[in-house]
Amino acid sequence: MTRRVIVDAVFHPWNLSPENQNPAARAQLDAVHASHKLSLDDANRRYELTDGEIFSDISFDALAAAEFVESPVDLAVIHSLPCLGFTTGNVTDPDRAAALRDRHPDRFRLYATVGTPIGKGAIDELRRQVDTFGVDGLKLYPALYYDNQATGWRLDGEDFATPLLEAAREMGITRVAIHKALWLEPAPRSAFDIDDMDSPLARFSDMTFEMVHGGTAFLDQTIELMRRHPNLYLTLETTFSYILVKPRVFDKVMGRLIQAVGSDRLLFASGNNLAHPAPLLAAFDGYQFADAHLDEFGIEPLTDRDRANILGDNALRLHGLDPAAVIAATADDAFARERAAGIPEPWSALRTTNVPA
Image 1 (cartoon, rainbow, N blue to C red):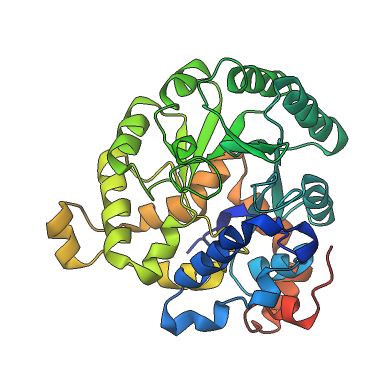
Image 2 (image 1 turned 45 degrees about the vertical axis):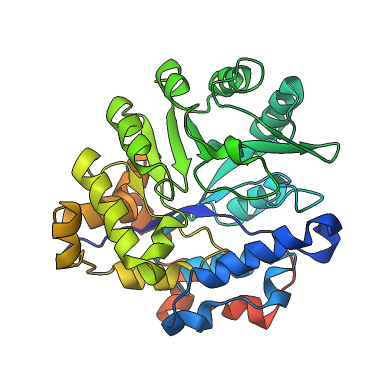
């Protein structure tokens, strides 16, 4: 049987160290850690990060080991992240992310980000990343923090988003991921609505868009958008954690999506370090919707094709990658050799040393 390639569509080491924390946002920082804890069931508590671990300048290399040694992931997409209001600087710095990608080019793809609501500044910031280290896509956050103010913006806005997307297209960027559906304070709640996606999806039909956290809210509207726009993918960060803690919700969301629009635009994502990929993948291995949920939601059972699509085939197609080439490039690298020697305990590299890299 051909080996299945697994792609994690969101990998983003968060720098929540005391030096990067906004002291006025203690409640938001604590909420981030609480959400991490709530994403795990009791059987998987060993994957829980302590206060000292999550509130640190976490080692990118240690998280790469969690991704490829402790978990059966073959390839991951790094999502750079700007200041989200509860930090003073970038959450996931694009320059450090690029350095990690360059150390392991067969294991990572990289999305740039922008951190200013000023259009020209955002375009210049993106151009610097494209010219300096090259990127495979653009990650956007729907609220930006400037002069200690949170500014929400709309993806269909003519002043900021449209010129930025036009510039990204001119720079050769064809993939755009945007955080939606899942509200994260202190950003304005309206910024995470999805009523601003319809016209950009049509206007930029030659680009693909990933709704990050797709399925956590606005399920009916999401299905309608996917029906209308074949260039819309769902990146299932957070949604995938429901398989451990909210299996009924997981079955409803995944089942209804597959029933309505098929499984060929759904992307597995852990959001490492906010979730470890290993327990999610273990739970999904051979997973089947509960019989009671098939009747309750009017959905069909998962197929092997659905699982293969979600776990990697869709992401490979999105990035123009050949699965055999990915397997050949990673089969005997340092991560593969270490995994073959024995799968270590969760966060083992992080807990051995947490030196930023």
